[in-house]
Image (cartoon, rainbow, N blue to C red; front, side, top):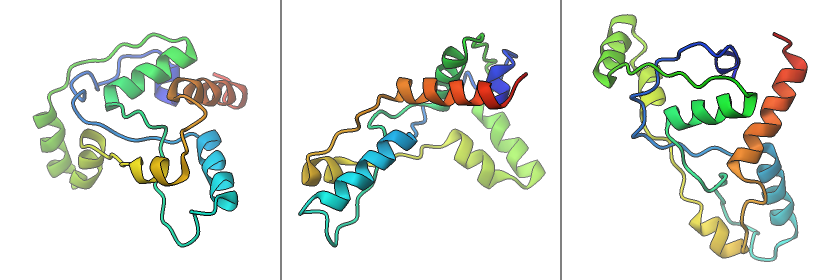
Length: 137
């Protein structure tokens, strides 16, 4: 969020085929409240997300849009990320950055009849508003 708020070019344009699941605090709290009251929730394990998966590049774009800053992304090839990960001993960090981190929340939705009340875009807008209020540039 801090980097996106500066409007500087970021090296994520090629990180566009991975998918990651995110969850806003609003959606997480809503699911917790639902689980407290729902008769089918007892003894179950539920996964939660905003039910819309984005690539790293898309996520940076959503952040920039929510912050009303430029979304300038440089195309750095994935193989270069992998080489840099090996050279620096940070391959695990690179894997998390360029790989997919998806959750399947179909069990949660079906069992509880639950859908996230807040869209990912709304979540980013709330996060950006809070970020800007607490992190004056």
